[in-house]
Image (tube, rainbow, N blue to C red):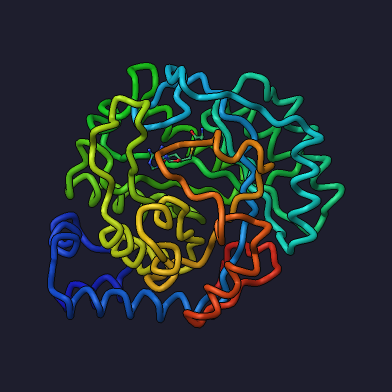
Length: 347
Ligand code: SAH
């Protein structure tokens, strides 16, 4: 299997069978070598720097009913909130003072945020903080809408593809949500010029190892600037409440594979990884991730943006405790930096 890792290292790609074999491989030596190669690549390109993003969860109101998600429309136990422009700008203000130079606006698909409302928010953030990047993660919109958001100053867009297999997609979403539309959205975002992020959950219900290989092949072909991968974690008020959580070790292994497929990719050690295992976020960094996204939402709404049970939003996961995060990164030999942390094109 060491040869397979070398092949991935040299070519940045493997075929489906090889990916499945690598994903299934339990050999400590091979897995250790995979991690070493991924970390080496990451250090070559991004040094030991860890980019920080201030995550502002702008609304948990959502018109969609994704079976895995705690803020799905049908969840009557979810106490709903939405942030107004002033709230968001005040998050940016505290974030800026803490050293954040990227703000990520994430939320459910909430009809309140028309193009007009969002463009106004984005252009205000960009004019107050011209040295900052704005990332959006607001789900599926039309190409025309994405273009308006881009033109008002948004730099990046995260839209996980969730699974590259249409059949699997239909087991995670109601019929009105299709893989076809998700993929069209991703293509549109990239065409418009956004630094674009896709990604998926590890261990989502009905996922097979073959599905993960398909996700990786899609990522290799799509060449996104960002990839978000974290373990699935059940939420009590969803149809998947009794499903097991995804595996942290497999998630980390996948991070290493992605680092070798797309050496320059911006790859977060996700909150879900930190939530499923103690020191999960640090582990993600040690397997090739180079981004962390602490929570910058107003404190009184943090426990309401509950995508899954026991989602971390305190301690080093909280933006105001950036010093804790810095310390934990320093302990493992990495350094958080005050920078927009853009995708590196050359190298
Ligand atoms: N509405 C936006 C943001 C969704 S939340 C959108 O559609 O892109 C961001 C990500 O959280 C989702 O893409 C999904 O992959 C992840 N997520 C949702 N529920 C989860 C769960 N139960 N466990 C782990 N991750 C989850």
